[in-house]
Image 1 (cartoon, rainbow, N blue to C red):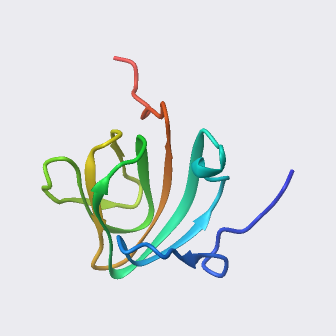
Image 2: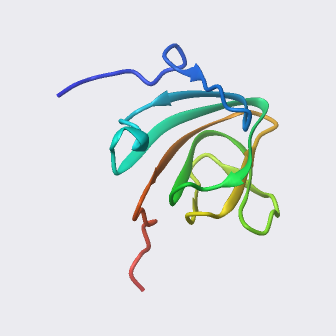
Image 3: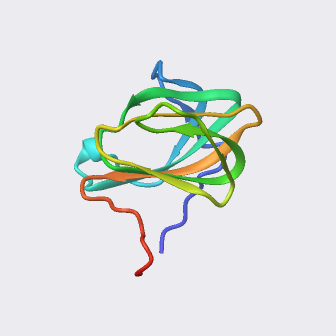
Length: 119
């Protein structure tokens, strides 16, 4: 077993113009370093956002704390709160923003599929 922290004290602000008020704490090796999937905790400060961009890989954003708005291909913003998640397909334009602040787990990678309950 290996323990490590993903708290605010180890998070960093990425040098990406799409990330406004966002701190990231990686949980796994990056896709760009050879991993099939990557996971990270994103902390979006009040008034912050992850600006509209296409998903490089299929992606799940699961809100752990706080609330905000998310949009997909249609561009229509929908509310999201702690305990909810969204899935974006590869290439789908999407955005996340928050007035109050939110903490989310983001997982992405080739072949990622959301869980679907059997009918």
